[in-house]
Image (cartoon, rainbow, N blue to C red; front, top):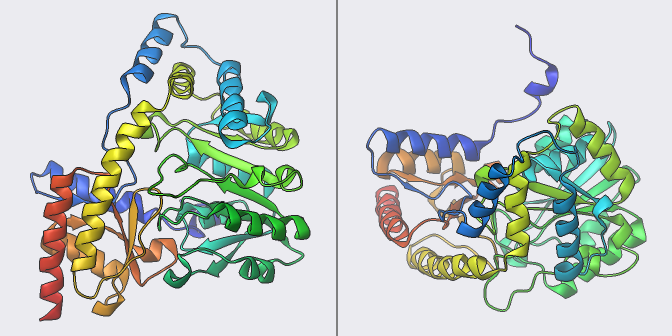
Length: 389
């Protein structure tokens, strides 16, 4: 069987591959410390599950509108207006099968062959693959630990050409945990307005912030940037709803209509009763989010302290999300070899930085319990000792 050429143009998800390997080892009875998946280990809050049970009892089990249940689109628009200062209306919103599907639908509706999409490195590993599937060309702009893994306005300005269609802006960032300050967001927005370049703001980690970090939606910076902004978000990270597959895009109406047409021929509607859980998440307050954030803060402190105590490792202190992006280059291994050996020899699962466009680093997720973190960091120390012999 000959597959379509597009399949060979993209890479499988290393994140999912390593996570699956770690789960298989656990299923075989092996004690694995997994820092691989970007998935909170908390259960979905009870009030969200209760809302879905009620929806099932009420018969919310039929086909629904392709762009989402009207009540959920209304709730999302209200959330964006009140929390993010983004004046979207329900017709500016489409509900999708997860945040990943939201970005995929966006690329399919917007990007054509010849279009360039600027992506700062390190990046979430699916961004460039989605661009390639849509026929576009990803343009990578390298950032470093010295700048907190943030693209500068000058770097962005220099990367823009007459072929640039879109800039991908992820704050808080996966994999680095970097959070752009309001002033930094405003400076990026000024460049985009001057060059009239669209921006997709991936805000999936907006609620997971530490210390004095503040999330600023780029579309709220000025009246000029708002029509150029596409806002992407979802329920997986903040509300521990990863398996629910609920995301959304908010954007100009013509883009939402285009995405709706594509979605109507691909997935039809998003799971009807699950959408009532999303409404409960948006309307039920943020106490459950704060409880999870308190736990993430402690885990971040413990893992970051352990990394700082290990020889030859370094990483910036993340201001958001639940990842450390650790530089392992002092040990002379590429990131994939490092992670394969770490899993085989010490049963610790990490994601190689090459998946994110930086082969000097590995990504560690601290979305797991403290016992696993402490045990895993001890094993990492033993692994480093073996490399130093």
